[in-house]
Length: 185
Image (cartoon, rainbow, N blue to C red; front, side, top):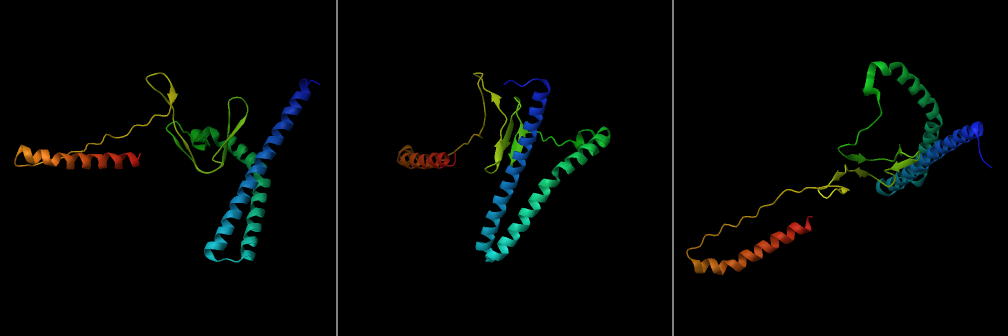
């Protein structure tokens, strides 16, 4: 069975509605699990009773559900406001966050992919966004540059024989310094 014309448009609209509903459910479940984790941690650390934790959890869940239910209204009102004031405020009203120089996504967030799919970042904790650069070989990747470290040994001895005797000590000091440097990489 092939979809044509209006059927295809209606299917796309229903798929978009379903996608938004699933995203809302994902947000609610994520908030619920965070609230539950914080509540249980609070019970253990602060000595709160399970009754207090469950009451707070119920309040948080109710608040999350109410916020999700009001989001369509909020979006439509903010869309109208953006339309009215967009000409005056320009890019200041934009919710676009640039990451060209890198950044951190600290909480879950959705973003559009080029092929019509939706991506999710930060779902398992903070995620770093790193700009990619082309290396001399033409390959694309993350580049990192560290500072150069100089280790200087100044040896004062009265004669060449004393210097030869201190050579083993200097070699051992240098080996330890290099070893410490490698551990911090």
